Amino acid sequence: MNADDRTTGGGERPLPEGLRRETLAVRMGLPASRHGENSEALFLSSAFVQPDSETAAWRFAEMGDFTYTRTANPTVRSFEMRLAAMEGAEAAIATATGMSAILLLIMGLLKAGDHVVCSRSVFGSTIGLFGKEFAKFGVHTDFVSQTDLDAWRAAVRPETRLLFAETPTNPLTEVCDIAALAELARSAGALLAVDNTFCTPILQRPLALGADIVMHAGTKFLDGQGRVMAGALCGSARLMREVFWPVLRTAGMVLSPFNAWVVLKSLETLALRIRAQSASTLAVARWLERHPAVERVYYPGLPSHPQHALAMAQQSGIGGAVLSFVVRAADAEAARRAAFHVVDSTRVLSIAANLGDTKTIITHPATTSHGRLTEEQRQAAGIGQGLIRLAVGLEHVDDVTDDLQRGLGSL
Image: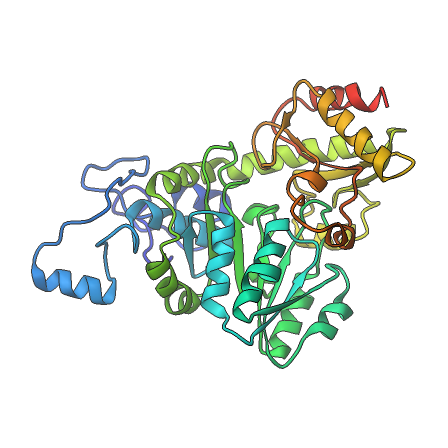
């Protein structure tokens, strides 16, 4: 959980300070065992044997070492240390999924009577968790425009404890000004949490821009190959240990050691993947923008994106690997038929609801990721029936555009 337990990088030599993210992604973790393995070990054990009763009593009381995998596991710890180092955080806590990370965030920070301000453009399940599930327990959430700072400011109340943003958003890739929201949160005595799933720490580090907490759906780009579920929170050591870890220990929404090991190893190639996929996504976005059957393209890497300049400043000058586009149609019913036609005409792309995979994934958000929202909520979030989301993988970019052309060319 704590990045202070610095690795020896596979031996007994401590890592030097100031290493770049790419190096931390390969080297950060717990020290190797006495066997000297160069690849991090997978500890598939639910419990850990204690040398004596006194040591066991101390470890269970202080959690100074490993006792039970629901509270800590060496493989999970290595993943937490690596992700925290890459995010520039003091510590991280790994969870079973991205949504369980948000659940942990809410359970750790909020109580009945508290208030949240959240972007209305966040992932559909996030809207459901804040707006419906926790409303049952007296936590009220106001949803505001992702890009309207005045709307965020107007929504803040004396009882506001949390501002939550996802940037870029899913699926419209709207970008918020993290530094401005961080300043607003500080002035209100609240915390700012940022979902960094789309950018990953390779492109964007919200903590450096003033955010208090970074959340990840590690199922997406951190794994990067569509294999396992994972989530995480990153932030100060105090928040992780005093606020979130006691909840995690009790509620048990922990990441399994096997899933932690898969994502831990995937982090080693994250920089290569996210940059290659982002380059392909920019090429596809430019191609779509020129296509006569496409009404609009949403991608932060395009100059036509409303927050292009902000995105380039926050995201290391790279647009990311997810875009959305709207097919031309006369009305909502025709738009849905056209979108379904484009999706169903593909032969290479995967029709699925995930993203961040090496395989390009095509999705109709209005009937999948945002299908459980009301039509009013979808309209407020800008999710129309003609909208298609594309998470670009590692195929040749011409094969991706050729596959899209099958449907777009016959509308």
